[in-house]
Image 1 (cartoon, helix red, strand yellow):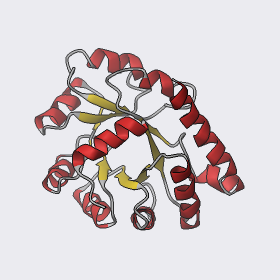
Image 2 (tube, helix red, strand yellow; image 1 turned 90 degrees about the vertical axis):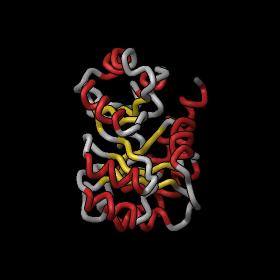
Image 3 (spheres, helix red, strand yellow; image 1 turned 180 degrees about the vertical axis):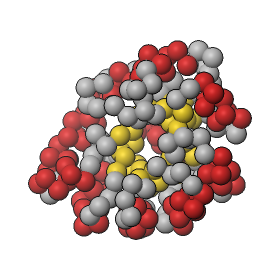
Image 4 (cartoon, helix red, strand yellow; image 1 turned 30 degrees about the vertical axis):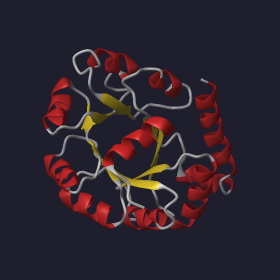
Length: 213
């Protein structure tokens, strides 16, 4: 399945939720995919916060049911490994020039982490108009996004960090927010708790809230 860059953004704008997932137990991946597909959240960002990241991306990419991306990408080597493992998009915690250059050369959507006007401008200089805003809660949250949306009226934000069930809808109410990311959407620990029962119920609750708005 070939996915063009613009389609990734369109899919994110529609889904609104980008689960951030750290894999330490590969046996949870089938249940993870089952829950995401069942709730029509066909996005997953697998972070390079464990040694199993690349293998998890490979496994989750096999069926073609999910759009799998790589998170916490801080180096060119990680970006290359991610794409080789099936990642269709890349998310970084900062503006990392070598990662951005590589992704743009491969037509891979890249979401650089930004927190300041300088960060956002550097992303814009690359032609990137959808950026990660991280850590959102530390850097002013929705109030900051509203303020930054003035001068950067043509930028959309993907906030992560400090976002949860209690405030994600507030973020999504802002026109500058394309979607929200975080481990609150689904996590390995929640899947392990009772073989995904609680994880499925929690995700369904988030999706239901989205459909009600």
